[in-house]
Length: 142
Image 1 (tube, helix red, strand yellow):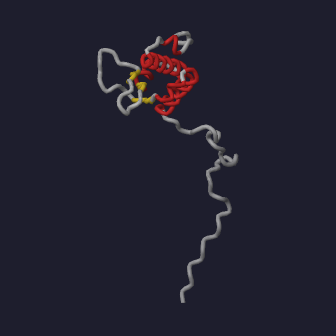
Image 2 (image 1 turned 30 degrees about the vertical axis):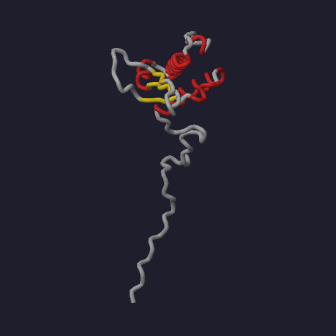
Image 3 (image 1 turned 180 degrees about the vertical axis):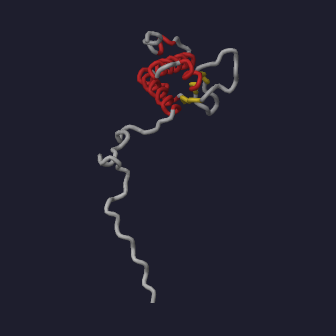
């Protein structure tokens, strides 16, 4: 009768990636910080922040759809940063902010946030038939 092969002796050291004896690495980022947030998600957050600022002053904006698109479908002489679409039968009013044209015109996150807010204010003003300064008194001052 053949006996089963003897098992290899246990390895005296546990095998893990600890080359210099400093212990295992900690987390790469704190748990409350997302490790990967795409540029489009970050941009959508900027639009949402701007909308929330304006909704406090203009509650009727809760019925308007705010949409982020990468770029406009039709090309004109100038590339628009946003568009306002009036309400139609069964369709709510819509404000579209174009992500790529805004990103190209801004260098930093702060500059992008200001430009997004200006675009949202301008489109809300167009939709409501008001001047941008009456929609947001701080328009153009930043």
